[in-house]
Image 1: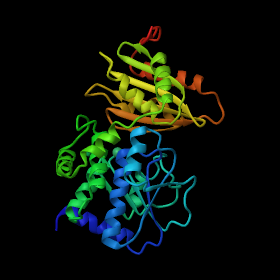
Image 2: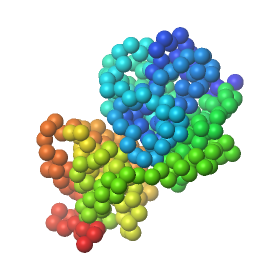
Image 3: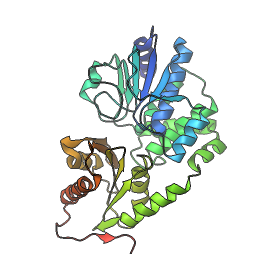
Length: 337
Ligand SMILES: [Mn+2]
């Protein structure tokens, strides 16, 4: 039996007999989390006949992510609080204790499938498959589906393909050979028109207003671009803007900050091979909030508790500039004059 198939067997053992099986992607789920959750739901249903329910917390705001869930027939249900009646829970694209999912501390996850750095609490799970060398959780699920010879419908294949594409920036960043292999097995199954519609989803006019504000707020300090966007329509916007700003010539680092529902949201991009975005954001956020990510991209948030966002955002920007060795007396150059 292949190692992959053994993993699936152990995974199914952890879910077998569940009365209320809940699949939990991270808050504000992204394409990788959404696709991996749907893949796990289908795998468990086909193998055990158990209907898992995918619950999410936060918001699916980015136009592409909304288009993806719509394309999949809206398989995710919003919950404001942890469902107490769940007797089996699977975390996907997240882990216990990361602060970016609803699982209460003290409740053990039965299943954990993720590609972020391993967390201590993950060792309590009945089944854990954490591969921090892999670029997307979707890649791990593709391995499971292939090992069990579960036939993928074009919707699921397209979602998983997009999940890998989005997390690895078209295989260009943090992609392993496993991601490339999964990408290639999915390619012939992909609904190209469906994928195009997701990736080019249309956006409301506010999107451009927020983009305008973000670009006008952007300042450059010797290859380090920072932007405080202010109030966000949805938390993912900081990541979108960070991606856009990282295309600016000679940019090494980008940090974007915004406010969403009494929370400061931070996104970091690093355009240097040796740079460590996760380390930067952990240093900047410290014990004030939650932060994590990879070498090239990272995110974090700090609860404001009613305090104004701007002074804290300025503090974080100062800390980041100091960490990156930008001289204290250097004035930022506005991106747009
Ligand atoms: Mn992911």
